[in-house]
Length: 335
Image (cartoon, rainbow, N blue to C red):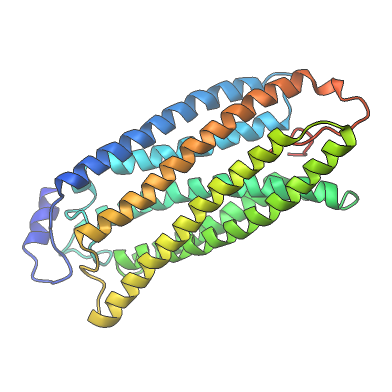
């Protein structure tokens, strides 16, 4: 990275600057990196155990879905850990974003900046895929109970289609950068706007599905004459934590994008749009909320994993009654 640093430091262009990294930023990167690494480690261990259970003859589709959840958590956490634990100087000379174009021989730092953003983008895709998977299976279960005679598309097919669509937008962003339509900060802006829109959609969908799911569970509870308090609380827990995360993320990305656009309008460039203070606040809020929601998902899945194991052994004890579904319950779904 010495050549990159020399090129940037010796540049006369105003939008590239090597402004170092503060002690706070070093500490923040280490703390968040270690937290994401711990999350990745826990999810890997649980994924291994879940995968072994999924190979059991008595295991259903539900266990496979739980394994998929752990796999996505592991992928998202690993990519975030890599981004934080690899020294910033490996990615780019400055800690705050620098507006550089692709293929700029005078500023080879564009390559590291692009790789940094690609790592972030891939991590975001894995993170949002977790909630897309939840919403897809919730929608399938609700369709089963509200439209029992209708034909249902496989949840796996819908999930792959939605994730592929989101990935296509992210790939388009990278291609636009490589085609020199905009700088690295333009790529960051596109990413922020895209995730803000997806976050708002997730808030609406989670809220709607949660209300319907609670109605189904309470109805089945009345039919079976059993308490459904545990299932309802679990759904509320997922709904509240999920909505808090997505509302926070949407507001954060909207403020981020607005600040970038305002700076461009006033200065005609997005270079140096972010001070260390502003970028530190954005980074801390964004990624601390991510590691928190991933840890909460591990907590929720842990209790769900034990419930799944019990459900397998008690699957034949329900008689003629309809079993009360859990949040994320896919034992009877076609995958």
